[in-house]
Image (cartoon, rainbow, N blue to C red):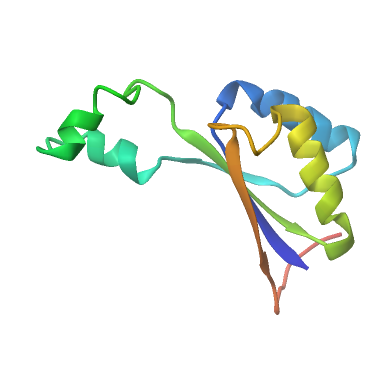
Length: 111
């Protein structure tokens, strides 16, 4: 079992992603709003490099969506393929970031 974490940068793709999950019988996702460190720093009154970056990054952008899922090892590739089908290749800039963490203990997981 693994904890799969996906930070979605394109919020307009969330509904399509959830539909694709449903179509592939992928369940159990938890979704939270999140914000990257650079965006938080840009919203503060920082001088120097952070102040300069404010003009390069769209400060009005919505928060990201971070999706957490406990996934059986044999389902990892299906989940990744489903994500890329909905949001595009994760190799493209500003799509999102995905990683997994091995789980050695879990309770309350319903499957």
